[in-house]
Image 1 (cartoon, rainbow, N blue to C red):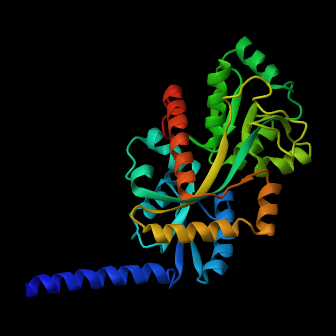
Image 2 (image 1 turned 30 degrees about the vertical axis):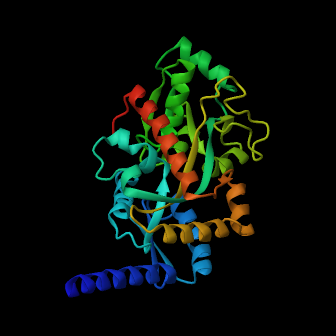
Image 3 (image 1 turned 180 degrees about the vertical axis):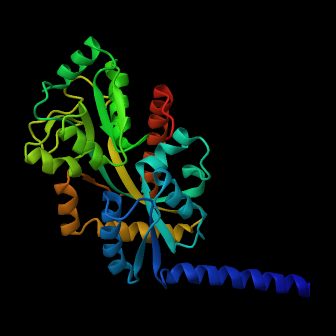
Length: 322
């Protein structure tokens, strides 16, 4: 009986300490993992949201870039971290919803090894061509591709990213065949498009807009359901007869699976509060993005639905990693 009481006391003490640790969270700096390199869109947004959240949580949030393998290295690092809330990170479109099907041998499973915290943003892509291109509408491109299958080309920032997948879902829904020309980065693919070396590219709004405004690119259609306020004269794919060509490049906060619900909820509340910041909201909207927010369950549902959608696209197109 004495031993049983001692065991019970020890267990009760551990549970009390665990509860106190959750209640005091955060009591030290938080590490924020970005699975892409410094200077890109994911890195910039991570630093912006981390800065806002650090003020709310009253602790430093230290951004750490761990790029490589299409976002898999950094995302796996988050999955393998201690689930105590002190390691979180950005969960992006490809490593959370595409790479499991694309690579086939990931050392983490987004649904099993990671806990969604909150969606940060969603952003459509815009189909652009060189301003000297003969193609002015989606119908022009479809007609040309059907007349000469395998002649039109599209650039991307690499295998399996939103650039390529946007073109692949367009091909599948339009019944056309084009040639994929992958580059080491999206900016390299865009530069070659402006030089006239490829036919078209699906690019993120924030990346394409400066060149569109400078008349160095011609926008053809956007991958959101509705037109963007930034490009009010550019139709959505749904408007021109391709409603399934809907692509939103998204990212949100994630933590290792097993992170206590109380901590997930506290991080979710802090992120939702950060997303109310007028300066951050204006920046996100000015780049053509939709502001996220909501519950961990909302973000989990998005990840699941996107995984099903893009897994099917990858399999149908038989996309293989580089």
